[in-house]
Image (tube, rainbow, N blue to C red):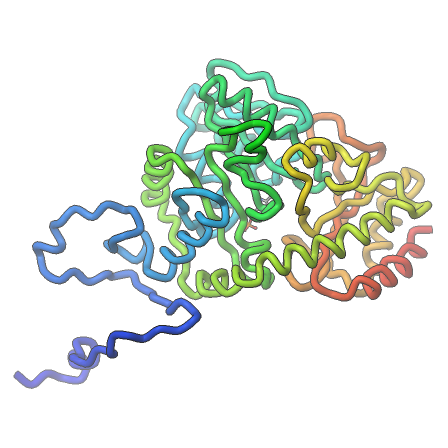
Length: 394
Ligand SMILES: *Cc1c(COP(=O)(O)O)cnc(C)c1O
């Protein structure tokens, strides 16, 4: 039978030879996954990362990334989702039912706050925000407790061990936003194996958008678990919410993973240098960085090993400097971009009016602070840039 090109170009007999092997993982893209025959189609396929059914649920490329991230996080299972925000919404949507209560730290990532306050109530889920430095009060209807270490913008490091122990004692599921720690600063599933053996979060998620990508280009998230039943529940929601990822983006995150630790450590070093230097400046009221003595939650960070820290610090200027002067300082910076996200190559600075975004008392006087995200530039150049911009404060 002679077939036309429109057919033969699709049903072509040539197959590339087996045995291709190289350092990078090939990019396997698909919506359709082909079955051998109808018997193969009818066979049950457990969604365990070992078989293929439809491109939305994974290809060899995304399964490889998920397996590497599970190792990084000391987990058994990992689901990839299209953004860090999707990794925040997945656990809440998968676990909470009408009548349940979710607890969220007051310094949680802003979009988690929005989900909790503005979306979950329409499904009959109630919430309370808690002070991240204390162990929240748990009730019978509390079904999920979020933790974020360190929390967003003000970077208080929570009482992870105390809160995890209290939740564990009552059988309450815990979800940790581990974007800051990137799976390197501490182990979310076992943050203190010697003092608190067996204690850890049930779910550990990350915005891969930050460190694992490292390029300020990809948006993606991961949701890791150790418990099979919990993974199945999350996986069920993952499938039915359509949370697939693009394989070209997966390729970029796989590429970023190779340099993850090098970048984390290098950015940590420079960030601590700049944060300590800022803490000594006359214009500054307080610097927030979990490794700085006196920064809120410093003891909690030490309790989980006090090892690595992310490339973030925030600066509260003395209340004498108005929000407009703080804006002028940020505008005067030449090497710092003004924009969201972090852990990419370019340093960033963003002023935040905290009085509008939090419910509980703030850990500093005054409303405006600047969050710095340190990139990969030279430390002396960054310090000189901040020093020249400080004259715009006056
Ligand atoms: C950035 C961030 C997220 C969300 O990630 P996106 O990929 O931007 O959606 C979630 N949690 C934390 C702590 C983050 O910093």
